Image (cartoon, rainbow, N blue to C red; front, side, top):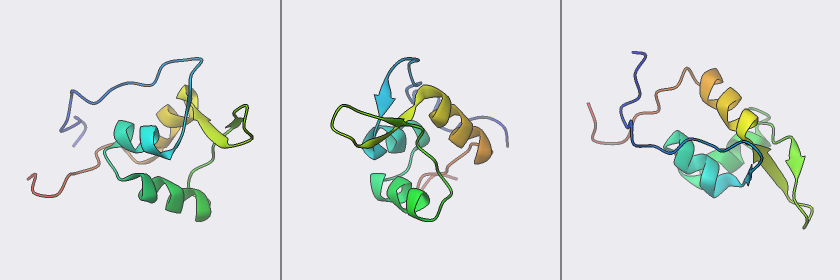
Length: 78
């Protein structure tokens, strides 16, 4: 399957930085899943914000989406 089951999902904006909550929304997963991917070395944020927190760039989000082959299915959707 190559199409996203939720076409209304937002797209990342170049120049913005995103945390696990926003990345989860882009990918259709819970923020804790994104945190787990970071811990498991499956996701790699490439930026740091002014407070020193690791953040994902729009390019990171797109690369992560592509690496997932992206279709993340939601519970109850067939």
